[in-house]
Length: 262
Image: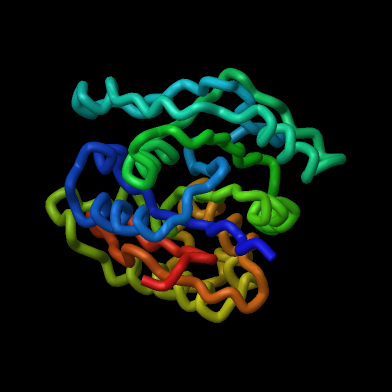
């Protein structure tokens, strides 16, 4: 029996991590050496929300620069990975009869390419993005993810990208390595839920800890975590990565399933 492909959730933080040599980028490059080469990658990024289900279906997805105020070098950065229309169609088939739009307008946003440029810098592995449907609850997202489980047996690496703590208004730009106590408490509660495979508690994240309202002011950076958790097999032990909080209120905690021991 084939070994299932890994599933990752990574905190992506600032898009500048694509160009930086720092603790985050080094952690992702170290992770790259532990990943088998996938047939393709399905990415779920906090930065693509839609009304309804959608996947990128272009054979040549654009590199999307969905930000402003950063150096020109970042705005010019390209991650020219191919798409894979047949993977987009496979996602739609797994979610049938739910309608899944085959989208040719969206490409790869920074929640995807700022990580993949370290994990697979050659940009030679096909990448498809799956949108976060704004109309669905956390429980709905978890159930959708469960239906994508066959992809792991088909050589597909699933990369979910967000941040378990994402309070932009509370950031302290003078403390890149600092953390607020409340942010650490919520991140630790998420880690404990993952370690215990208490997915019901993770889905009901507003009640996971008193700090939830501040840690997750809007859901899009948290929801990708539920895709990774839902795709884990019963008894599969999570491995934690890059358990850091930056600028006081940006949680970089990552988790991997199906990863070979370090």
